Image 1 (cartoon, one colour):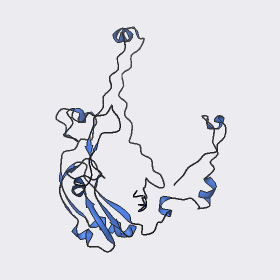
Image 2 (cartoon, one colour):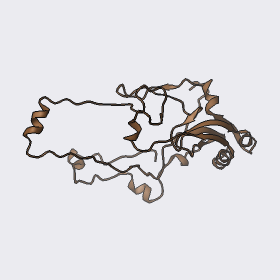
Image 3 (tube, helix red, strand yellow):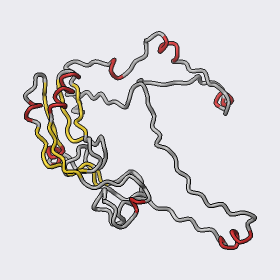
Image 4 (cartoon, helix red, strand yellow):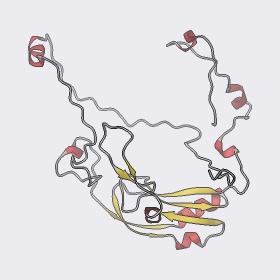
Length: 219
């Protein structure tokens, strides 16, 4: 949805155990909510992404000719096409995490299932998806590692070859004075390895972007 509000009541309304009154619920019950898919601009185009089915693979070829020939297709862009147009994103947004060089579309290899390899732009949503299905990608599968502890081993498959620390991108060390004495004087010492399941949100509408170019401002 395009907006989300809660009742602007006193701070006590947001305490643990309270239920703040949502002020937008009524329009959703009536089917009057606004989502990105409800917005339509003149000459609007639609994009569909071609994504990797492999977790770790080298990209050997991307055949887009069949997709470009389909009705309604305006453009088909691959990762290699972007190399001459865009600078890579160097960094992770945090000074604590090792910098990584990435592009919006993979051009040399994919590093996870669902990595975007190409994007199709067409006049309708369905034309874009049909054309995306027509793109043929040749992958050469590479070794994978799905255990985070095994990923830290020296001989583990590298996700980013540029990292001198292997697959380790962030590490924190804690120091406590007289730690050995603390353990020695403790009534009980518990050692445990805790594992959690994968967690992901499942919203009714995923993240979406609708962009419109203004010829007057050039933005």
